[in-house]
Image 1 (tube, rainbow, N blue to C red):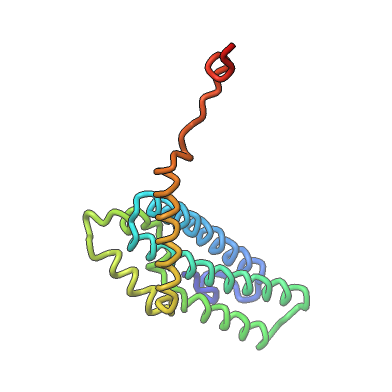
Image 2 (cartoon, rainbow, N blue to C red; image 1 turned 90 degrees about the vertical axis):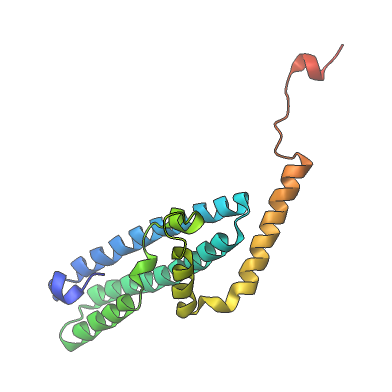
Length: 175
């Protein structure tokens, strides 16, 4: 991750803010890929990968909230003209927040999770990392949601609600 004290001048909150916003954008893109992968897993009835992607999505959401809070604190510090020890303590707090983020989870690895052909243990490794981050307490809730969505998808397919209607004037209005 970004080490603010080494990569940016300590006295420039604007650079720190720009780095945080770059992180937020990249994390947001990975979260979007997780959402798309989750929907694909539901469609393909892949229960375990869907659960891993849902947990990863929740972890990303939590990290994004923390990063947004950091940006807000930097904005407040810029407005108030923070300096000296207060400024250093704020920078150290942000460094701690960023160090807590596990970088292995912030890659676009959706294909490796959904179809682990080359490395079958990869989804298990990611799931273990997510469980260590405190996301294993809602497993039942996640699996229940996944099962409901899979059943809804199956019932929609069986009922034919996805079949395109035919709009032909001759066929629909016989005279």
